[in-house]
Length: 239
Image (spheres, rainbow, N blue to C red):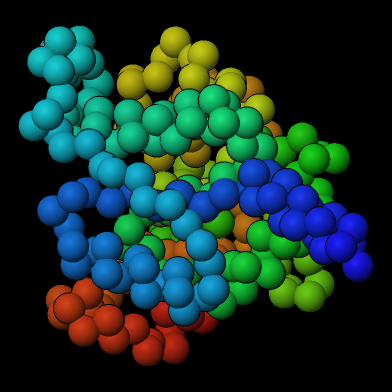
């Protein structure tokens, strides 16, 4: 019995290191912190907060060097995502789900992550975009279908805007941190646009139906964050 319990504990530790969840949150956005925590708790998901980078705290040299391509806010967002990628490599985290703090989460997400684990190793996937917007997304052939949650993975053909929710592998992170063209495009275009050189070197799939959608992409009352009132059936049909 003791050996069995130890084996279960070891497996839990191994799985914990294999797949972690991070969410990005600026220090002064307590409203969004409350919102994302409620989303995670509601879906029984454990996640680590990653402090967002204030544009005002950026080194002026970085701003001046990249002002041709990005605003200070764009640079800050790129760098915080890169910090997560570097942390994955340093701590040998095989896969990470990266969320932004204004994201609505589907009740299917936890089951999706469990299903995705079964194929991530074998298929050498770099990124799975689980996010959606009001804009339509063009996808290619169906690559995998998870019957239990009726969700598929497709080749991503069109440019996808936003980085509110995506899964990335450690190998994908390694490719990104070595890229010399980093900070030449805003983070969503860098990852999900065909204009990005690195995009062509990555194996990226789109989850459909998607599993996250940012508040900025949906028509809700301005007090949604204050009241955490997101009982909107039309929204959840999208995810």
